[in-house]
Length: 415
Ligand SMILES: Nc1ncnc2c1ncn2[C@@H]1O[C@H](COP(=O)(O)OP(=O)(O)O)[C@@H](O)[C@H]1O
Ligand SMILES: [Mg+2]
Image (cartoon, rainbow, N blue to C red; front, side, top):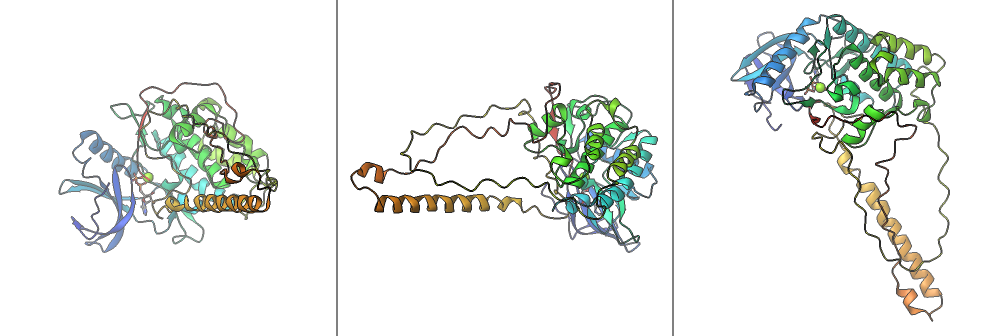
């Protein structure tokens, strides 16, 4: 969405800047000029303001947010429409979101349990009122240390929240939201309930303790992971007690009946499992043996190059969506990942230069009676692509394969 209302007035709100952008709305920092207080102002995208279904959803979001009066749910201040723009005004949380916090790696068990314990409180209350959040993920968990001596959490973004147990899609059958933390029944468009949010909370627990979501990769891989694979063992990634693996296995069970009874029970089980872990330190990565030092390779004449084989396309290729949320994706900090390609490219260039240098040295000091060999360029094998796409992630094992509904189209819900 390109519109930016910064500097403009919307009724009695002066818009001071952008806090975050989603697929359907923009969240602004604003000032209520009547009261002189700062607010967070969510404004529906101009292009969707005309769409009856999205207008209805936005009104629902306002109703659902205001329906829950809980210390861990962002308080709603106001809801209205000015110049054809629908808005929701709520408390401005002066802090960060959990996605920003875990962007640089895992956080300590103690902090994880304190933050997610509060999310669990909010979710169980929501569920007691017959609502299902359906977008539980780190970017929707706001954290501030400005209000109390410990960190206080607000569950935010009730844009997908639904009442009742019907499968949740748009009228045209689209899946709304990001699949990174979504439960299998939600992805399939089957009935959802409190256990659907509990599954997502277990994914967030995984992400806090490891610094990455349980399933990574392209959208179809992430979806296939949620539908068909066991989550990777946390203990294969970071040094934590084995009991936490069982908590994740149960929390993220494909069958909702196997999961914990509520969100507090999930966090309680995690607390139990992590009792023996160092409480205040971020878990250390499990050390993997370093790769063997490169052996000097005998010079080989060039092989005919094999064409790169096209990779088989996964069943989810029809999915239309922004890429799955990387663990640190947050509305608070710009993503700098676009420059990460520089490192491998530079490393590759240096490696090629080294190979050329070795060849020049070998050929200039070696036997000059085989001139063809001396002038042959080194072979850089171009075989089949690694196939890593089709391999399950480390520590994952396929379970019973289920097919994806053919109408699964994913459209973004925002940050
Ligand atoms: N009350 C708030 N105070 C401060 N920042 C907020 C608040 N609500 C949301 N944000 C920030 O804005 C982002 C987008 O808001 P959200 O309600 O999640 O909208 P979207 O539907 O676009 O995801 C959040 O991820 C969070 O970083
Ligand atoms: Mg959001």
